Length: 164
Length: 164
DNA sequence: GTTCATTGCGCAATAA
DNA sequence: TTTATTGCGCAATGAA
Image (tube, rainbow over all chains, first blue to last red; front, side, top):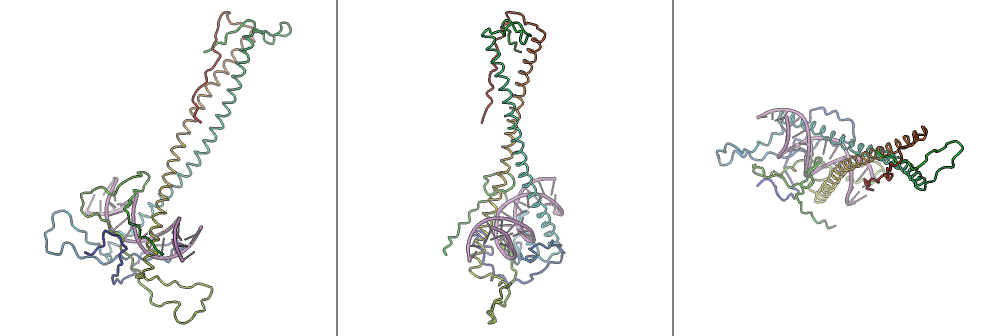
C-alpha cells in the first residue's frame, strides 16, 4: 500500500525528497510574472518495481511502467516536449474560444442587418399592397375618372388585375 | 471554520467542445482506474522565518512570505479550498465556451431563417412591382385588356412565415 | 513502438 | 482574508 489511490484525501506526503532543481533547459520565459514559480513538481520517489516482489513471471501483458526515472535524460526530454505540446494546445484552445466569441458578434451584427432589411421590405410591400387595394376598390365601384381633360387614367371598364 | 470536506465526486467531465454528460472513462480493459496522478511537488522548505529575529518593525514594504509549510494543517486546507475553486472556475469556463458555441449555432440558424424570409419578401415585391409596371403600360398604351377577363386575384395571400 | 495532442489535476501567484 | 483566475508542469490517454 503505497499509493493513497482512492480517497483523494490529500496525501500528506512526507517523502524525504531532495533534488529540487534539475532544470537545465532554458525555458526562455517571457519575463512573465510567473518567473518565480518556475520550479516545482517533484513527484516522489519511485515505488518499488512491480516486476520485483515475489519473482513472479509477469504475464505477457500488463506490466507496471517503471515510474520513469526523474533523472533520466530521456525523461526530461519527453517532459519538455510534452510541456511544449500542452502549451501549444492550450493556446489553440484559447484562440478558438476567442474566435467563437468573435463569430457570435459577427452573426449578431449580420442578424441585425437582415432584420432591418426585412423591415424595409415589409414596409415596401405593404405600401404596394395598399395601392393595389385602393385601385381595386376604385374599379369595383366603377368609378371612372371624369372623362375629358387629359386622360390621366383612361381605365374604362373594369380591368382585370391580371395575375400571374 | 468548519469546512465540510466535499466528497470528491468524480465528476469527470470531458472537456473539449462537446459532450456534456459523460461518465467516467469507459471500462477499459486495463486494470487499475489510474485515478492517481496528484502527487508531486516538493519544493523544499525554507527554515528561517523572516519575521523572527526580534525585529518587529515590519517596514511598509515587501515582506518575504514564509514558504508555507507543507505539513501545516492550514496549508492543506488552503490548498484543498483552492483546488476546489480551480475546479469550479474551470468548469464554469468550459460551460461558457459551450454556451458560446451553442449561441453561434442558434444565430446561424436564425440567420438562415431571416435570409429565407428576405428572399420571399423580395420575390413578392418583385411580382407586385411587375404588375404595376404592366398596368402602367397598359394605361399608357391606352390598351384595354379584353373585356370580360375577371382576374379576381388581387388579394395576395399573406405569407405565414412569421415567427417572431 | 513512437510522437504529438488533449485533458484532468494540483500548485502557486495574483487578481478581485 | 477568501475566492476566482490564470499560467504552468505532470501524467494518462487518445490519435496518428
